[in-house]
Image 1 (cartoon, rainbow, N blue to C red):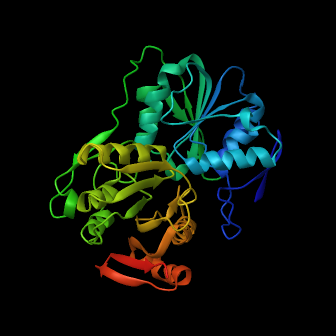
Image 2: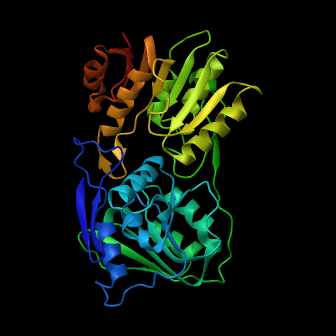
Image 3: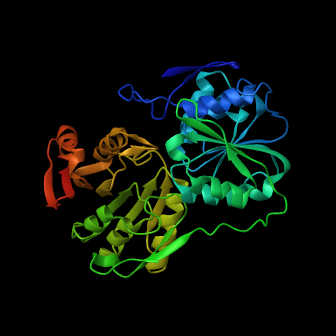
Amino acid sequence: MNRLTTSQGEFDLARFPDDPRDQLRAWDAADEYLLRHLEGAEEGEPVRTAGTVAVVGDRWGALSTVLAAHSPVQITDSYLARRATLANLARNGAAPGSVDMRSVRDVPPGRVDLLLVRVPKSLSLLEDQLHRIAPAVHAGTVVIGTGMVKEIHTSTLDLFERIIGPTRTSLAVKKARLIFCTPDPALPRTPSPWPHRYRLPDGIGAVSGRTVTNHAGIFCAERLDIGTRFFLKHLPDRTGPDRVVDLGCGNGVVGTAAALANPEAGVTFIDESYQAVASAEATFRDNTPPGAEAAFLVGDAMADVPPASVDLVLSNPPFHSHQAVTDSTARNMFHGARAALRQGGELWVVGNRHLGYHTQLRRIFGNCVTVAGDPKFVVLRAVRR
């Protein structure tokens, strides 16, 4: 946990889950820059915060917590960001209801007077978010984006300009920038072009030639990534009424492949992204017979799965948390998988060779074997003894 100091007070903030081994803060220079600007520290005049304040893409709840007195609406694609916000509000004495928390799948507010946008890593998610909230923006809305310099590109500014109105950027401060956008009521409010759908290539097992659905912001939303392609060629060949979890499911292609290969299996799709779980459900429904058994869960890895209830966990873990490289997410997933697996149950993981997942799996499970590998990826199996 770290302390953020602003003119509005000092705030103890942490990411979620709060892991003492994780030294990453719950905010960065882009959040600080935006808060200073709102307070008038950058240009001398505080920004008006009357009316409805919407905070889009708040990564760990830092912005929402500092602005809790203004009852902001937080819009996020991240379950972990929502949990972090609740925890940060509590540790700073703010009521949970002081922030109206909505996912990107929920209906946005009907009118927004101050729109604050934390630029996401995914350009497609930004596009979808701006399209969804644009009808709530009016001529008097103050629109401010923030991000690190490496996150803000010409394409980022083009989206604000095309969907909301004329856009300019600030000077860089501590490698962060602000985006100032003036709403143009004359711009047509067109629907989001998302979701996208694409046909899977041949030669990748049960899902060869199938079509997957991809909502904005999910990993590799416009094409199948090479790690998942490799994984699909080496999934376990199992039969019977297995309980299977596609952990970090993305568009659900791995869990759907398991369901098609073993129709007796019941598959649970889990991701911390609301967009991912919606994608997985659409992919599964479009490619399996009516009545096929599946569950779809937005959550913190395996936290909501009962202990010793699962036969097989399949996972392609992320190794980034926004722009930061970290193994904390994968570590949490591996510990959760072990707790959820029955004795003899298996965790199958695909990952880049350089990530060294085999070391973590041996430490957590006491065993790990390499099922398949190429110069870039390995498929690993660990068994709950």
